[in-house]
Image 1 (cartoon, one colour):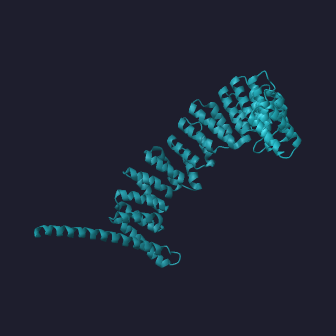
Image 2 (cartoon, rainbow, N blue to C red; image 1 turned 90 degrees about the horizontal axis):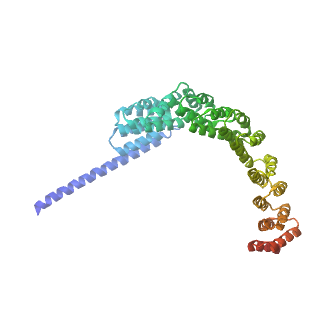
Image 3 (tube, rainbow, N blue to C red; image 1 turned 30 degrees about the vertical axis):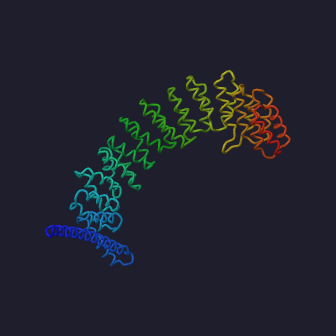
Length: 476
């Protein structure tokens, strides 16, 4: 029995010893953490206790250096966090930089990241040096850390890395190119375009586009005719994002000359986006592009003019209705029927009156009714709707007009609808439009409303429409 207890006691003693060591380690960590916090708090009073605060700041730096040089990972993490957020100043930065060569790779990477987050240019040389590290993760971290400390002189380095590095390095360099702030950085990026290789130019152009550096476009445009397709596509992307009416002619020229499908699509999108921004100021340059353009390009230009708008654009669309190519004239008709400005109404009335050409008649009627209907910023044009009803030759167009009239709570609209109650093929649609108007109309001649509702209740077969007419009558 005694011999069995001996080993048992020995194990218990060993367990207690291990527990004591763990507790001691935890207490030490806790104490170090509290001490570091206290020192950092003291350093925070620098504006008031200059001498004492400087001493406290130095003590905080000493403690951070000591914790980083130690073996306790938890304390190292705390120290790294303090480097990122506390203890400012060039002197402190240089102390931390001195530690780099003495730390293992994993901790070096974390320190480089923290130095970048500090945003102190004093760490820049050390971070630039790490771009040549043999450790891939270090190079990636250094590329990202440059976003906080890089100077305009480093733009070619970052652009080159974004163009030729590994995928993680490219992504890190690209993020840095976009995060760097200041007019000097933008100017350096623009300047770096000159003489750069194709891949590097693409990265710079894309970064300038993402940074919305519009004043870089004169230099960017020098690559619009580059021999490299990828470069030309990057230029068109930049124009799509930043171009204004002054660049319309350049984009039109590109659209007319390109042969590659992807490039043609990008040119069309760039022109479309530019005209959306520049509106009527772009019209003249687009119109000039029709000269010598093939049918497919003319169709694209017609669609773009719809975005530009304005009198010049409208006149060109009308002129294209007689284009020699049927596909072009059809495109012009569709754009005219969808025109947002009521200035197109006279042209649509003329086309609607040509009942021999059913396609033209239908599209013109649809456009005319849409323009005459009420909009967010304009009242309904009852005179045009009345004229459209006369121009309509088929039930479908007449019903379209009745539908528009039914949204207008006006005695004149009610009168126009009521006149269709005598047409057997339209009575149901006219009756429905009439109860819609009568239910919303305010003021006006109650006798008129009563007479129309009585007629609806008598002539319309749809029971729901009749019931609604009766309810209106009850409320008069």
